[in-house]
Image (cartoon, rainbow, N blue to C red; front, side, top):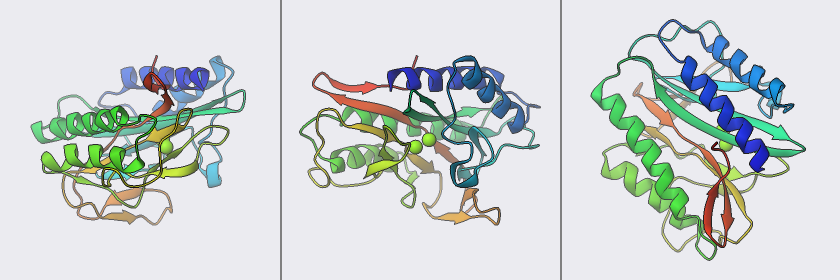
Length: 236
Ligand code: MG
Ligand code: MG
């Protein structure tokens, strides 16, 4: 899973570097495909329930599962990139949201808060804890900033498959939920809206947008729970 995670981190790095006004989301997908091929890895996104790409590219009010295509990124947009890799049957999965050129102070604050909420959740991923500790850590950072946490989509166990039990919600109560144990590998992925938490699935059957049209950000890491604390697998 460390090997798969390193491939995902490299996809992130290469795609992040390419994000600028004028680039299309299809071009970002092509970069993801190049990295996978160069590392002998395969995609856990391509073909997933028929998904046609190796990344999800979700601009502005798109929360998750945007399909790469001819969409041209514009100055001031934000873009969420989610992707994964399989190496020797083991999966990695991670996401980030990046600015396109100069973005508004509110958009910049959304990105900072969402990433910080993920890191707070990861810090709570310790053997002996509870899943609710993780959700509460995420939720408290987000709500203290005046933003909202999406409820309909959650993180997940990850290993031999991309999506395994248990669910990893981005909200919860300390001391509640599944017990966290050594050796668990979990993907934590807060989706945070500037406005209300409600979601809407568009007619393509994939693209999930905020119901109120507000901006949304998404950060994710795959994490192993060890006796020495949480180990982030999807970073270089
Ligand atoms: Mg995931
Ligand atoms: Mg993901």
